[in-house]
Image 1 (cartoon, one colour):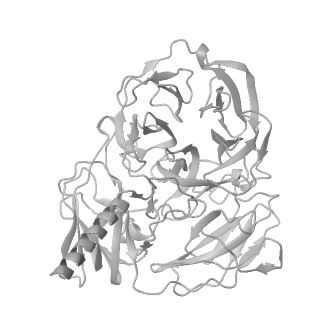
Image 2 (cartoon, helix red, strand yellow):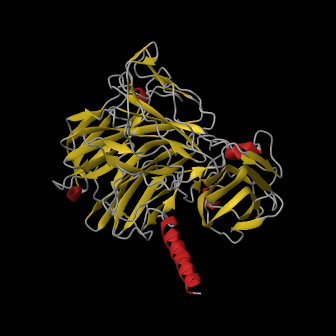
Length: 586
């Protein structure tokens, strides 16, 4: 009896600890109630985000959202609709904390709003504001050393990024004249070139400036080459003052995510949380129904030994934890260490529209989706994982197919159940959302108890004004096999256009996909991209930077790290020199 009690106590304790950990696990895109836009076609949008920590809460502002969100933990967000900011419908908002007041400015307006209580919709216009310049993509910045305030702006394929000091005591009147800070250099920096593969013969858009102060340095960030691409990214220049001179940060773009379920990591804002950890919140891309169909992503940030800013982006559409203490993101990306179990497994559905087959819901591309023929109760989608596996979490990404929602009746909610089975005949309900009234288009559901199962299905429980549809039913957990073999045969070739590389390696029979890592130093491989083929051709590199590469392999059982680093110096496409072993932690 005593031993039974001890075992029961240990089991309960384990469940409590697990629940506490699970409550802080998220996955990109952030699960916000993204607003439907007022015009055709019906679609959701939020972009150009900024997060400010103010009076014990985080406040998230984003373009075209009709309001903003607050949070105490960066995990759960509460939406605050806003009518008192007259420019709330403008693009690219920026906010600034001065004392007990929060200030707001948006693109295309010189009007500044302020409040002492952003939890309520009671903003006022700063009538004394005399900010002289008509700006696009503005960014406030307060120098913590001098107390001076600056505004940066720019959004153009020809004009530069500007900056100027302002005086908040005189209605944000400018002090001096604007300074040209960042000009276009696509001939040097391949990631500034537009195109799905940075391959168009025109100049991209430099935009979305943001400033961060860290360890006595000033990091002026900017986005390129265009929000409609998966290669949308953020780079930076580093200086010793808020204005000139600046030096290009040679690992730029530091925030880039062209691969995985959802791509894009540009036009963002880097901020420090209440524990002292740094984060980058940025724009992620769908852009299927409309040029500006976008979402929001959150990425851990750290600084390398040489002061370069780096962001973990590559597997942030997998579950990861938001720490509740000061941590070292350079040593740990805080992944939940759950593997993707659902990729291209056998699926079926109650019905589907032509061009929107069931396979679209587990192909790891948010840009396409499965749509049932109706939005009626009972429409279902089913997956066979191939064998019994441990399932820890499911991310359900709804696609809103044929919805007619507009901004005036913007938000919607789905109701459904999820069932699991080991044999495909006997089913057990594991998720019940039949009473749900929250708009959660990208919900990550952590199971209270991991399930050993092979089959899963989702069943619609609410009549919809469109079709029951999903861009991703993504299952995470632990497979029942072995991790893939180490990648061999890596070949690295730098093209005549030194902004472009081609990498090839031997296909691993038991690999789902690969993670290509690169950096400007051999032991600083701080950028990465996920691919599902044994080849990568990319043009987002800097002409004059040296690079090192390695390739990891992954499947539903784990990740096998690459153990060799290859420099870009090659002969006939083969590495001149292979150095090993390589130590990298991400």
